[in-house]
Length: 151
Image 1 (cartoon, rainbow, N blue to C red):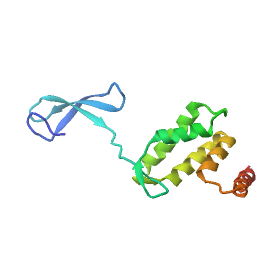
Image 2 (cartoon, rainbow, N blue to C red):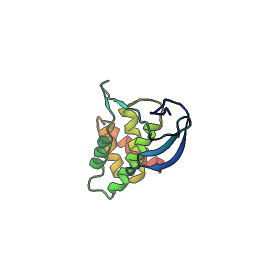
Image 3 (cartoon, rainbow, N blue to C red):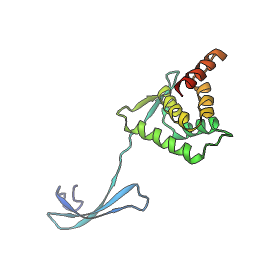
Image 4 (cartoon, helix red, strand yellow):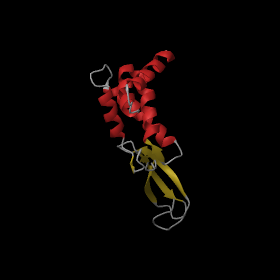
């Protein structure tokens, strides 16, 4: 870290504390050349994620859209909002931890379905019916039969 007073590159950390919002660390440093103290803040860098839609268009990742889709699928079902938010947190973490900066809606949909399947089967089927765009009753029945075979 470069000293703001003399420009020296070497400094030592005198004190470290979490900031009030918990999103950064506040560090008091002392320059090894001039002895003056200064404060720095350390943040986790989050890179923007771009979602590639089915039509090829791109837009910024929005966790609220995932939550809204889960809310619709879980409507009038015994699934708590906390459970849905935890699932969205997991999905967002998986996406952030991947080395890719772009993700398709298909990949996001599969992540959502994995979690819904564990939480509530009816919600899973509701989400899958919209996400997979079942064309007829046979494709819907196929999905149900596959689900029953996995049990």
